[in-house]
Length: 140
Image (tube, rainbow, N blue to C red; front, side, top):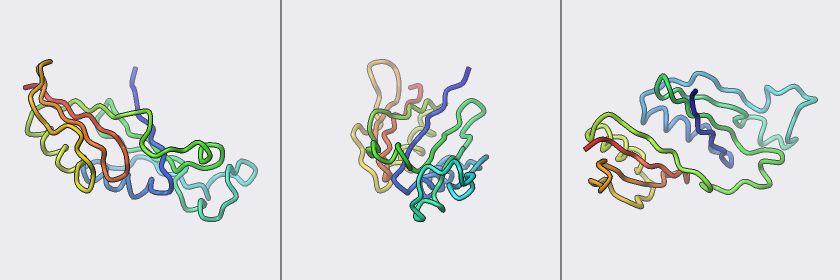
């Protein structure tokens, strides 16, 4: 069984995924635009959305793929930036945790700096420049 996190954006999906691609040194495995949807299935007739992301996939590890889209149609009406989720990322060591935390926090907001915790991890929390909440954890 695998778990993936699916992120919705207000038109910034492609920029966000290019950023995440550089942070994790990963390669996009799939990208589809709204313009590629058959005309009888269009969710949003706004021409602005035709070049926006309908679905994108960024494998980070063999077990985890980050998925995303730009909110359109019914999703657009209920879209709220950065709500109701965080991405929890467990890495192998403190050095890797510090590196990824530093890159993700660029132009973002740190809510809990990387530090040793009572539960035995090196842990920190932040909201990145796209409003996505992250929790980064590594063994002490």
